[in-house]
Amino acid sequence: MLKRIVQVCFLIIGGTLGILLLPALFQILHMSEFPLITNSYVTAIIGAIIFYLITFWAVDYVFNFIKWAEDSLVKVPVTDVLFGSVGLIFGLLVAFLIGFALNAVKVPILNAVVPILLTLLFGYLGFQVGFKKRDELLSLFSKSSSKRKNHEEENEKPARQSLKILDTSVIIDGRIADICQTGFLEGTIVIPQFVLEELQHIADSSDVLKRNRGRRGLDILNRIQKELAVKVEIYEGDFEEIQEVDSKLVKLAKLTNGILVTNDFNLNKVCELQNVFVLNINDLANAVKPVVLPGEELTVHVIKDGKEYHQGVAYLDDGTMIVVEEGREYIGKRIDVLVTSVLQTSAGRMIFAKPKLLEKAL
Image 1 (spheres, helix red, strand yellow):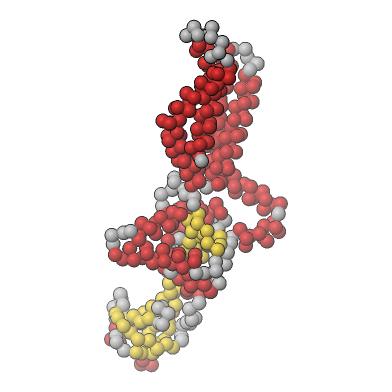
Image 2 (cartoon, one colour):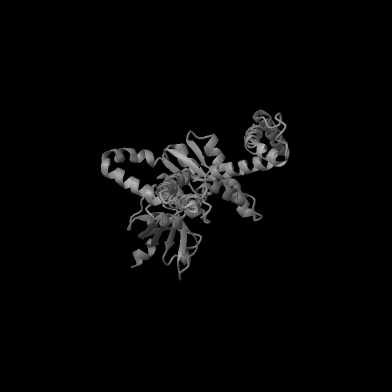
């Protein structure tokens, strides 16, 4: 269909150029005495035929160029296209006003060349300003809107933040599927195209461990999309000027006012520094673990020695690590311990304890 449209455009261009240029060409060739070929309809047909013959050679190049331009535009985020176009229109308007003012100066060369230069210069500058200042313009609009409609924005805040953007680590982790199945994670699940590409790259790795992790991530996405009652969207855009996937995720969360879902401790900190809403799966896991307070008594199985001298290491049923002071001699045994302190971070939770027998001896 597109090729047919290109051929029709070539016919129209050929007919128009035939009407405009062929009479002058016939006059140069001293063929103007033949009234038949200088007729407007005849010159239009001749020009259309010439350009139609050209299409057999040029249509593929034009078609490929149009498809390339279409694919490039589809990948660009809509905010980039919108603000770039607004800047371009504003730049062309400024160029037109300046060129209109210069028409009062009756200088032929100036009137012919300067408007073209102004159009190119201000059009380029307008597009670049609109494209590169889009974040500032968005924040400006959001601030002015918040001053006028504070109450409405509070009501709309949950709707704007209903987008949950998944990163690579949380997909490979797998627990996100169970969380979605239980209904604790509401809203629309957004999976960026660049995250899918990273998962595919990991799944195609020559390293067996990486390959298995990548395939597990793709299986988790397939389960979320086909088996669970949640809305899933694929974000097709990309930020080609940004290389790191984590930086692209932060950028996407800012543009969409979405919430980034991760279990990456470092990405969690970056989001907090840049005022991006983030949900950490490890924080959720820690929150639902049984509460252990200093002074409580636990029965644990010491399985290995710790990093420090005479330490032993045990684990609760949920995987929480317990560091037992003076517990190295109890490796392989079940003992009663008293909790001395609890350290809890986004990276996990660690419990410090000491043997109850040692407490009684003291």
